[in-house]
Image (tube, rainbow, N blue to C red; front, side, top):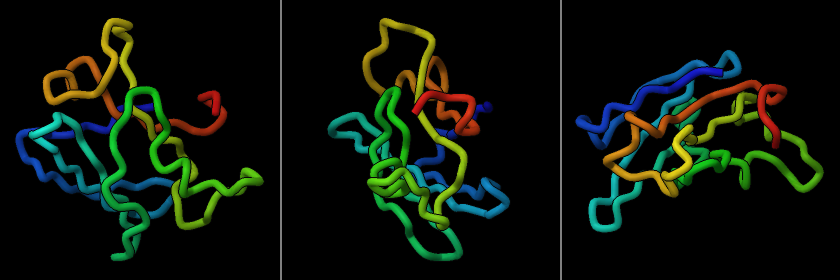
Length: 114
């Protein structure tokens, strides 16, 4: 398991990341009116997911990457991406806490409970 660093000062912020031996592009945006972040997932110039909201303790892209039988779409990374914190008083992802007490993590499936 590891942390994916997000530089809020560069929003909208984009970078490439190697997941499952593929190079993905992640694009982060911030909604200043309602204080939330979204992320786009792109593979080889094809947008797989647009504007997925970062929700505390929710797996990113789960609704679109795994079918009803639990099969992973091969275009998506095998790693699980999720936003979490060790501070139980935090209830949501916000500009103030992302990158300080709240982080975006990646993990192998066997490291987390789905």
